[in-house]
Image 1 (tube, rainbow, N blue to C red):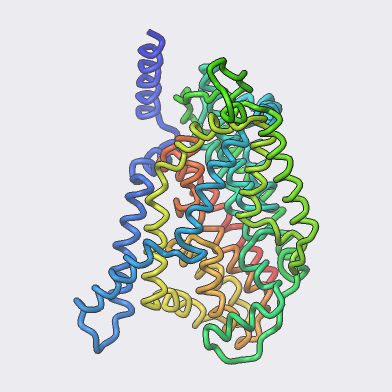
Image 2: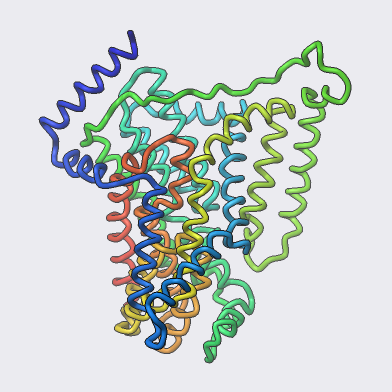
Length: 487
């Protein structure tokens, strides 16, 4: 009966919104109707990339049919890319998703999240809390920010579902996803941290076979710690939550979320029929001991890290290692950990096949030289003053096809470095501009939303209309900063 009443009210609410839509809700609902599933988007992007490569990069002495076969062959090989940016990376991403969710299901982390949930009274307050938390952690590390934003949004949804209260769940999810619009200017940014490494820029330019005189490195204080980046980052931290708060106040797209709440696995007593070594699965001493030992080794690795960046050890593998150690410690037994694993592993089922499709798109871009066509078409009209802004636009476009920040730096980095040196433009500001462009169009590119969609169970139609608003805010912040501070 409760379900029937809920469906009736939901239908009635939709009728009201359709009959008397506000201007904001009208275009948001129209946006939702235009968006297919993330996998369908990946398929369309694949065909679009193939067509562009076919008509923009085909050599004159090669037949269309032969060149198309070459492109499809590159795509097929890219699907199963075994390099650090291919299937290996996909497995890293799925592990950070699963282990992050397992960690969130521990009693200790659950208490912390519930402490924050006390301040989530409605859509507006929930949006601000989720956005600020995700952005702050995203500046430390993009993986932490993404997982926190996803899990916090999910917990907000569960809270309102249990209380039978209305919530604009898609807007709260978009607040968690906002972390991906600041990450590349934070401590884990690919372009900025790689350019800090001694000799990296020269090695990269030599590998790209681009002659010239290049700096040995670009120090921290000229990129991440620069005045430009501090101003831009602060503006994002303030303006994004404020704009989303305003949208939450104006939006009427609120419904009671339909979510199954995941109970936290509690320490189980050893069943009477368990004998022998199987008792280790239920032993709190074994589970906690293993977790603490791994955690101690993780601290050892951090203390003895000798890279050029102070926090350079915080990479995907290290985060996964720490998540594993903390999860074992806080769940207190292997059995509890396994119970949480069964819950968390459901989140990767919808994204498993989508990662290879983006690797295939990247392979087409690289093998055809389409990436160079994109970049050169914009940077060719650049001047010393306008190069950072045009690099920002170029990087935003490229990111739609190569959503990996590290992959984009490897492909586009040599182009912008060479152009900056040729024009006498500021290399640090140009690198930051590429970083801003990469993170800016994450709000339109569903690739990085896949983990969040998996955890929150949101559909892209519910998330992307609001992330599009964040996209517009980002264009204002990044565009104004690059045009004013780079003159």
